Image 1: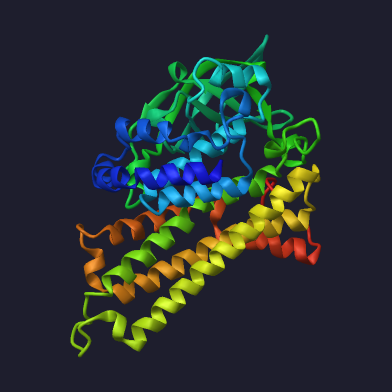
Image 2: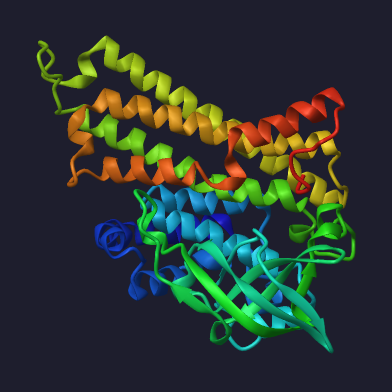
Length: 381
């Protein structure tokens, strides 16, 4: 699946490149862009095969999101989040999956796992209220995942478009085209089959031979890695742009008519490229390990899960350092509104600050696991 979709993404490059500035200005992808990406199969990465999806492993998630982000960061982020939410839906009961994909196999799902509420038990399900922020791609979604805390712990609820209101308030420095707005649910009934308890999943209830291999992966490190995927593509896009410009761009107030002839510039390029290689090594090492565990139907140990989260955070930090180096090497023209480099820089800076990617959190969890200390940071580990 990966090679076919990657070829389709290459074919989409002219459209995505041309559409990116307008999407950034309008704070959402156009309907035409989403339709073109749908047609290319970009959003079927995580959908179960019985609905025409690829049911792909975690490594493919990263490859697809990275490839799109290398063309346009916002589109790459939405690729990752829509596919990641589809992966979550595949963990719900089959009746809920039929609700989402039975009649519309290309349905997109937005949402967030950060709990809100209140929620109360009623016959046949729950009544849910609350508001949830930063739902990427919500303008084009037919469903959202909304989280709340039940007596037995946190749970995810699947809610259709007619049952939530979108609050248009996504005004950010970067990732503008993702339309990551807030949504509000007001006393909506959610049937029991659309409720997924998260505690058992974190403990590995999906890691069983009764589940398809693609959905056996440890949930928390898998989701953390998915949101790291677009950063890999953004870093490569920055490197390509700066290297291509170096063929004709000089260095102000020096004798260098071409940046590429400067040893100092060459060292900056090498430093950035090595940082991006390090990011790839960390991210794909973790993805490959999680895929192996999934094939074997084995839940990684607490230490392994912590390391995979740390791998994602370290990868993203290396991408950020590489982009900073490249911005300095390229020069102030990279910050011009007309330069795609400034949008790469903005998008990467905002995406790197996603709650799942905070280095201090992920590294603290890893450090505690290395030392055999109790994880008091997060129940999602």
